[in-house]
Amino acid sequence: MVTIEQKLFVSGGKKPWVIEQDKIEHWAFGFVLSFLGMFFSPLFLLGYIFAFGKETYDKYYGDGWDDGDLLATIIGAGTAVVLAIVII
Image 1 (cartoon, rainbow, N blue to C red):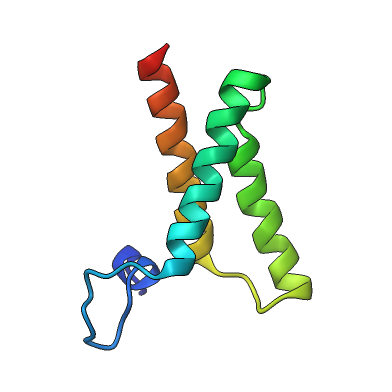
Image 2 (image 1 turned 90 degrees about the vertical axis):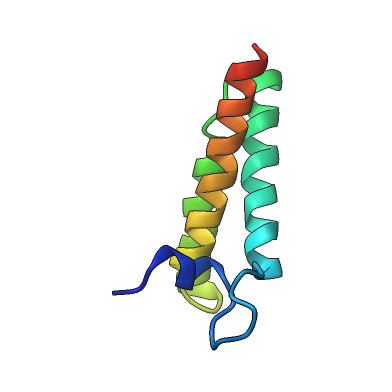
């Protein structure tokens, strides 16, 4: 079984605390899309929709489905929703 740490962090014994740049970008896109969706339209689910859409696209036209990318985007979207609720 693959752990969350293995999906989000660099493996192979090299600095396991370093997050891959790709995962940071997925987190940021999920965060920005959901945060903007909360304030500029009722589309707070935009980050989640993007997460599944992007991975579905990658499955058929890219380099394959990546659970780590999906998880990073969902965590970013969730962070934005929680932050927006706290601000409101």
